[in-house]
Image (cartoon, rainbow, N blue to C red; front, side, top):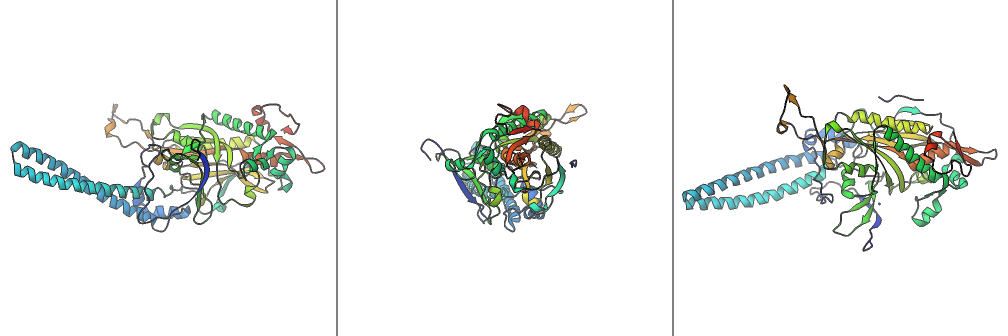
Length: 500
């Protein structure tokens, strides 16, 4: 498939980091929060769950989803109960309509006794309908709450297991240079005055930073370079908001978690007035990009829709420890260019391959050693059907580090955000079939992928491009000529950049 190559003040909102623990299932599920976006409730395929209990249960286990034993069977039983109650409710409504006709006919005939009997029956039916409507609404809320915790299905070719089970699809770029702690990007940045972590810590806290001098220009060059590659592939540029309604983030399935038990979910929440919608700082521009298409129906003839968005990503990163927190590798805010696509059901597999090729083109242009990984089930999160990561060699860290990721989410996000499309009207003997005879509008497929996550690429470029003198002191940085057209200001103002 892939080719091989060698998260208040009275007026202003306040940001806080809200840490939430996943709650286990209970016999009475918590109510669905009111949609702050005004979107309809998610459209979950309950029938598919009920008809595939074993498959869905095994899938949740393989993905290490925080579901207790029997959770999916519980959803299936609740769905059966919901259908029974809905059938009873419809029968009572039909009976009420018939009784209404009986009341009118009795009145027309002057049948007082018959009319009074019908009125008494109507009163009873009204009470029954009201009771059943309340019960159905409660069961429906419970059903939706339970089903929303079930992850997406998994591609049959995805490896099983934890991160270590990832399959290397290809290794690309130049040969990796030997690991060397002298190439640690933090040391390089301090020597060349490219990074100020101390001021970041004073102003905001740990894992916040200032990019200085050429490092600031490097961020601008990387974002413009990545966008230019995406534009050549037919993507439309978008600048996204960094603040989104929490309802949109939840519908996208964005549930960052660590390895604690139970897992933690962390987001930066904005404290807004009680009557206002809950807002969060976006964990990835994938969220506002997906929200652009919410509650819309597209003609299949204009699909796929492809956008490339630039925004900031905010991550509380619960549980991160050790080397991953050093310097720029794992930070709370970073600039990110994101690829996002909406396709028909039949196009998503091909689009996934196209997006992988775009990511490879970007990394090839940076002359970095990198590898493409087919990610295993425990690394897919809630929404991904299949995911590929790309890791660049970082000799100062002495390891490969993830720099991009791309996921096919199939209809997982579309069902929650109500992104649908209209198939072409079929024709029989040159005659169009009436739209009323066609099936319901299918849900689209969505895909997302990193074009550049800036800080980690800076780490890779600095650690691979550092040049040392005979005394072992870093003197300059070699950067790929590919970035030169996107460099603003003097090409080498301080004399530390060497274009190669």
